[in-house]
Image (cartoon, rainbow, N blue to C red; front, side, top):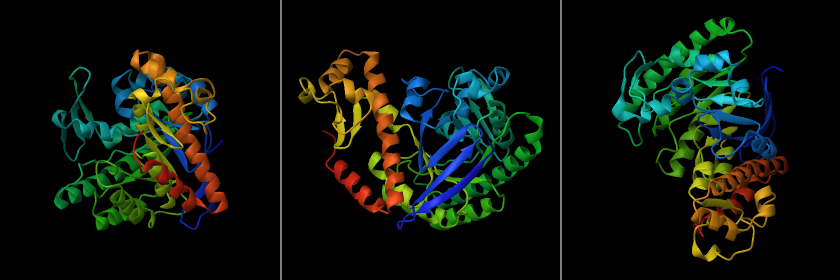
Length: 378
């Protein structure tokens, strides 16, 4: 099975219903990718993820490079074999994690010198190095190294980051194309990442520059990092207007349940976020009626499922009272059950979004979802 992407239907909002084909299976889009930072979704087995219908996961290049190391993973048959996951995998470049270590890194035109958060050892991550690591991992989709900056940022800093991001993208693309034949058995698509902070003209310019490099897919990076949701949407819209209609579009690091349809309506095909798993571990459950903070005393004797409308195995079997007890007792099972439910909820939202696009009523679905969450947590 080779790579391909097709848009099968569009909605009046601009949303796209498509299919991304990879050597490790097909992904119906728009798609949400659960985040498996260290080659695992925290608190879930891969059997559970398969049951939930996850068709693609995100793994983190920075963490896998530092531990256990890409060469060990290569020797053990690549990331799919290593983690026993035969569906698709996208790996990020490691750039976001490196740039979040502001006290431990230094950025130059060559790359980023940083100290490991594990043992303090010094490393240099270059665009070429990020390519090499991801080829060794053997992921299906690999991201280029880009320069992430904080938001809000001065215009001069955003301009400088845009220039560097394009230069790095050129180096990464050249190295990737020159290295493909050196990695037999690895078939991989490489995506470029649009930057530009919250400046519309810089976003457009970044997109134009990356289009010249002819990536098979494009991501919008550096958003959902503290700016208002409306700004995230505005910047995303500026970019998607310019991106090729026949190539997948990935908005990185989003988002809240009630926001997903907004991003899809802007022409986004792929998203990822740690929110469903992180919130689950902190006793926040997402439901069709809004957020449920399960530690609240009101749930101590509540015999209802987490979400009466949910078909996941957790909601079919366990009560809110039991989940609250598990969290109060500090039991590991609490995170397992909560994570299972939240991932199901996110994947089911995407299923409903795809269905809404098919029937041309995405705007109605989006309004109903936002109405559920406007009141805040229960």
